[in-house]
Length: 514
Image (cartoon, rainbow, N blue to C red; front, side):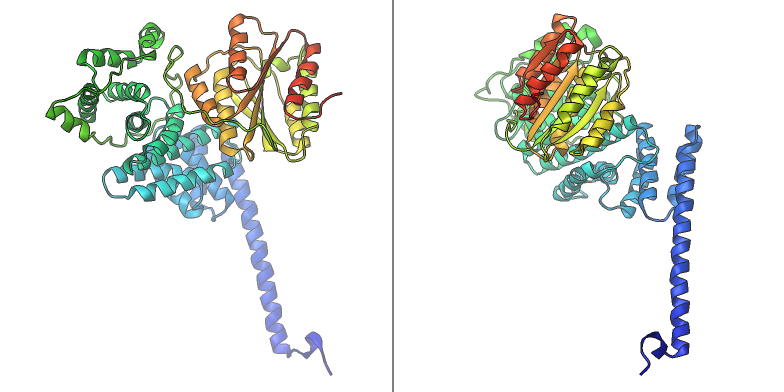
């Protein structure tokens, strides 16, 4: 009996051979195509001239086959449009990106802004918008930095996507009258961009309505919305509604005028004025109010979608404000740990480098197997040296790669690190270890915004103050630690760093005795 391939007629064997050659050839063509696309992509992102680089990436995005490189090119192009405030082009590319990757957080973020406007016009149900925005927020931690995009730009892209998705989710919750849920989303959106009128106005409505209203914060944001919308048709409606709502709650028009003046951005000169906003007078509701006031309050004006703008380079200075913060999430102190290590790069100079790098690395090597950690550095910028991982080798390499630079945006760094832990940490036991000299120079975040982000994150903060030169810096680090259930230690020489690290490690359950 003839068996195996010899039993197959010659004509059929010939056909099988031809088919096999066709499959191999197709595979080789596909591999060649992938190699060519990678070369084209890398050539585009490596181009020195920004205009020509963008043009090459746009051409690549239109021609490339669906896949990771096309996705990265589209994210690059969208970020460029968002940075320039070109919403129309960003939306067009976002639609293409969603067609390529329906779960892409950047695409969902940009489209959600457009759909938020549709919802306001009654063309889209709030539940549909909430579903899209929630899915985008779920997918945001999966976002990968496009090949060739700088780390700072990628962090800003993540921040902007987060803000857009939280904005859309909050607006949808407002429309469905779930004001408590809306507050959570909108606090995040406003923290990222504290001058976006749509979110400011929606947060005011969320604060003033629903269970446990927060009038003090709500009226402050409502006053800010009035100020930001001045000179527009919608601004007139918002101003009328805000005054009527304040009067209905028992306030006077004179007090409201003072309140509005307090909310106006006036740079550093506004510090004394803003002190009055710390404890604004929000009287008890009166026994009666006029029909006109009742009508105005019953129907707050809709706030149309403004053009998207990048977060401003200088944020509102609320340093002296003590407006109520979000309800604090109580951090867990047991179980596996998600640890963030935040290092001021200037402290890795020649004098301190061995003490800081070697001892932190030694501590990381002794973490429990299930623990995870990230390394974030700050100077004038924030840089992820390594995102959350439980791989000691990656963490060690990240520590070694830190280079000293000038600058100390401490508040920005702490707020971002705490928020990052809240968003992507695997475990509820969230800890942030801050290595700093206590300086806070040119931060965009105010202490109020930093505190709000920490409160929402549910994170314990431990601080090692290295050669802190003034009482204000020491107080800043002590307050960060004590307000979150952590502790602070201060050292004056590099030789003391190991003892401080060992003590904190023992508090965290890391066996670091030697």
